[in-house]
Length: 236
Image (cartoon, rainbow, N blue to C red):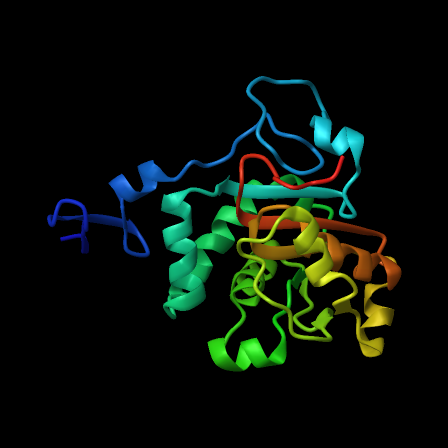
């Protein structure tokens, strides 16, 4: 008999499809499929052709080269992501890695190494694990590429990005991310994939991309579990 999980809405149990998710849970996730912007991964309502860019990316090219997201950020995706981040549900990392492997398949074939967005040591101590690293590790393993867990560090603690405007988010992480000297030789000339949980304005991953490119990376792409439908607060 297949394992069963409690549906909180109905109080009934249903067959589990994967990692405690019922078929109903799966049906609520708004997965992103083509067509989408080749720059930031924003979904398009209709196909604009190969390598098409949204108006925001045409107006201001992001610091990263391309971004892909597995699904849209809504209450259903948020609940799952928060379980990973704050409820010790590291068992979800493998599931999310599979989602990213599908969403970023076109990027992974060109990727040399996967780099997680880092936490400051004080936050890592409090949380005990970095959710981005938990996803990036199995993703790198499945894609058979290198995993660079410490290629980026946060040199100072920052306030949470939650609730901040796009400009405030950029100021919050300005100059925060750096590449340690010991990683520079490994990064130079490589195509890297940054992994994070949510893409909102892009401020965090752009800060990471700038640091990696300044250290000599040949290209920097991004893969996230979920993204807002429109990256609010982006300057164009």
